[in-house]
Image 1 (cartoon, helix red, strand yellow):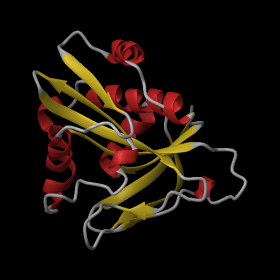
Image 2: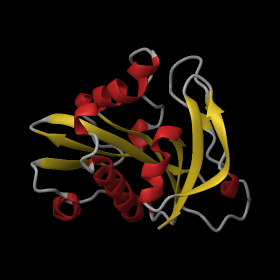
Image 3: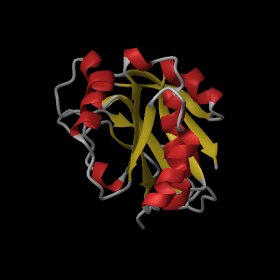
Image 4: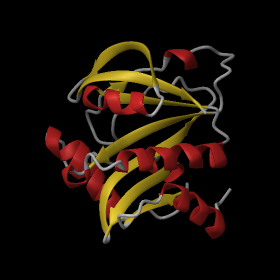
Length: 195
């Protein structure tokens, strides 16, 4: 299902700000600009010493991607994908070799889960120049809204780095499961939100 231009403009209008920031969204199958991936790498992978290419995930073409840019520069990124019916949400952290495995989400381990369809938010990050300006909230809201519209999502799940935990709580996400460490990345909290 593709979002027509009018719906895309309405969603962007709901999340636009008066400071010349533009919220952009790509639905599954649409072309994702390289500047989006470069921002993802610069914020999430380069600081950890990961090689270029580790910012890519094997299912990027099947995900919803949202980002904020100003004057053509991507400042904040994120993505959401549909968690398949038979999956508990566990997955490799990136598409490259030696990827750590992210653990399952407890509520999805039940075979008769009432939480489906479910999405997972991943690869959220903001460039230092864009932090503390509400850009992460704009991207997260765009991902949530488009996941409800495109995937009919009832719930969302994510694995928050410890430094981002308070941000997600401020956006009404709740901690589930016990905190854990993702090898090579650090402490994480699994979180959930009902839409």
